[in-house]
Image (cartoon, rainbow, N blue to C red):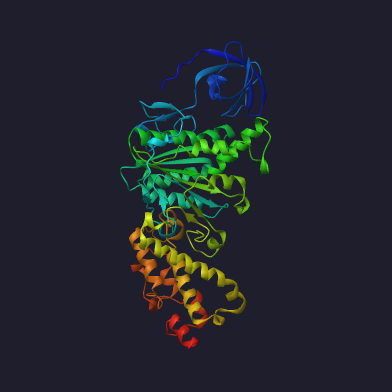
Length: 489
C-alpha cells in the first residue's frame, strides 16, 4: 500500500507535554495520521482525535523539546509505517523503522501501515499442534500451542527476560522460521545485552529486533508493538514462514496506553487504567493467529504489579492466552530455576486429544504429586518429616526429585552460573518424569537430579553429597528412601 502526501499544512496551537493541538485551514487529517514538525520534521505526532472542524489533537511519538506555538506542521497523509522485507532480518529497529544497530540502513525496503485488521476467521487454521521449547517444565506440564499466545507472568526480577532469551536460543535452530523480539519499555542495558548475546551466539541471522525504550515517550512505546506485529505478519502472509514473536513486556504496552489515555484527559477506570484497555489490547493480540499461510506463535512477558494476579492488566492479558507460565519468587529464592510455579501455571493444550494419553497421564501424575507435597509442607514445617506416614514420606521424596529434575541450566545464563546450558527434547523430559514417578531414582540423592538435562545425566549417589530431605536421616551409606521404609516398619 502506497501513501501519497497531501501537502496539507497546519500550525501548532497548544502544547501540554506530549499532547499537541494543531489547527488546519484546509481539510483535517484522518485519525491515526502522522504529522511532522520541528527542524527537518524531527518531531512526529500521531492524530488521536478531531476537536473541531479545524483542530486536531495528537500524541507526540518523539520528545517535544524545541516545539513552540505557531510552528508549521505537515500532514504526511499516511499512518505510521513499518519496514518489511527480507532485508530487515538480523537488524534492530526503532518504532519509526530506523535502524539503531549502527549498521548501514537496508535498501529496497517495503513500508506498510502498522494498523492492520486481524485475519478473518475463514483463513485461520483450526488444527492444534504442540510448540516444543526444549525446556522440560514447560514442555511436560505447560505445552505451548503453535500459533497461540503464552504469557510469562511474574513480578520484577523473577526471570521473565531470561526465559524469553532462552526460548529464542532454543527455537532459532529452525531455519524455516524467523524470530522477532519486541522490547516495549525495555531498559537500554537489557536491549544492548540481548543484541550482543544473540550476535555472539550466531542466531541473529534469523532474528529481527524492535525496541521502544523505557526513556521514550508513551506514544512511541504504545506503537512499537504494532510495528513488530506488522513485520511478523509479512513473514507469515508473504513469505509463508512460521514466526516466533517475543514481547517483553506486554504490561508496558498497557502502561503506555494508560499514559496516553491520561494525557488525552480520558476518565480512568479501575486502579487508574484506561477505559479502553480491553479494546486496545485486543487490537494487538487478535492479530496473532495460526493461518493457512503460517503461524505467529507469541510468548509474552507480563509484569504483574505487586505480584497481584487480580490486577486489571494481568486479567485482560490472561484472557487472550492459551497458556500461562507463572514465575514464583519463592521458587527463585530456593534456587529452582526456571522459577516456574508448576501448580499455578496452566495450558489449554494439556488434554489427551492434543498431547496424547501417555503425555497427559505423566503430566497429571506429576501435578498430583507436587500438589500433595504442597499440602504437606505446613505439617512438615511444624512437626517434621518423621511424623508423616511411610507412603507420605515416599511421596515427598518423589515430589522433591521431580522439582529438581524440572530445573534446567540455560544457555542464556552460562556466563553467570558456569553451568553449560541444556536443551531437552519432549521425549527425554517425559521419560525422566515417568522414571522418577516409578521410583527408579529413589536411591539417588536429590542433588543428582538438580540442574541436569535428560535423566540419563543423573550421577551415581556415591559421587554426590546428601542434601535436602536426606539431611534428616544422616549421612550413612544407606539410601534415604530405604531408611524411610525401614523406620516406618
